[in-house]
Length: 261
Image (tube, rainbow, N blue to C red; front, side):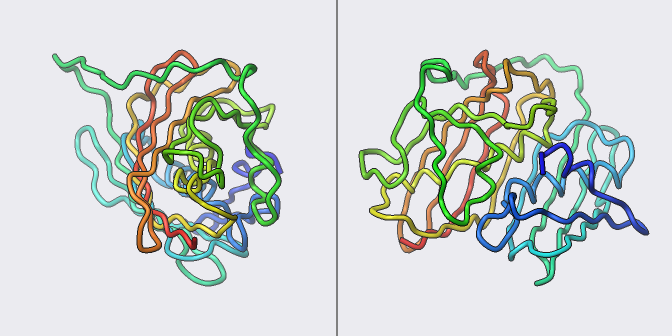
């Protein structure tokens, strides 16, 4: 099922929202984490009227999101310019994802500073393909990826960093923060560069900050850099950045990951 169709299938019943995730969006036995985050955001925006643009979000991936999913959103606080929303996504095994969103209206400001230059890389059509079929990672079929810099997973080739061009394969998709969240989590953790063989991974927490609410890019491509800052004791922490095709910074994130290597 294409991303736009799946998001459109989210339905409301008595103040709760529900959706069934098809097998092509699974990561092992659970719905892919980026999709769970996107479903939480879409449901929050439907449940709470007139929310301003998203400014930041925190996700805790508590358990597997399997079976019919139920999403509940609650307005935690609303001020003159900001609103905080808490969202829980639950499946057959109980709570799967807990999200906290901060939405904020743009305000006049004397400050205008930005220092997040995009790396200089070749355009997507000059970079090698990235995604390979791996049993259990069904969701990757919905994304196109190109390795622009760094090293592929399970290469032990050097520093654990990857810079990728990524896009949705969905031909009907329009850029939005919901679709960008679904895409941002698609790469494997950068620590996978250090792996000697395939091993399971599991995202535990993910914090996202938006730089802009103008989400436009050329031909659907986004430039994503992910770098592991440590990998020890079965865990890894990584920093992520996303730029549009013109090099404008769009999103920064941090991720805490369990690695079974």
